[in-house]
Length: 109
Image (cartoon, rainbow, N blue to C red):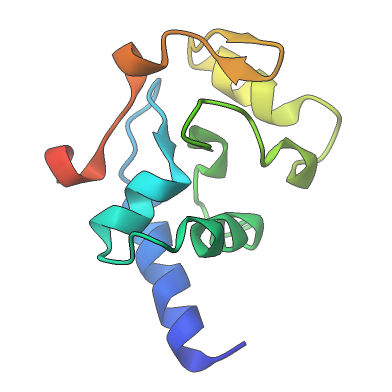
């Protein structure tokens, strides 16, 4: 991995660590906040590599609220279970009431 990619990952982790309990954001919202609006996929790669780094990766979903990163968590439903433990309703691998619980770093930070 290139050094600049590692630096970007750390910036992604810094944003993700600020997502409040019971809220979610999207890969694209983080990318846009970091000035890399077309890098949502790279934010996803960062989330995949965040395990063991004290990053609440379960709070980052796709723009439609789908748990697209769920297969990167141990167990079959760990991402969903973590979200539900924070009071977030998930049906068929999709966040319910996304607009109400969405945290936009561009507005919040």
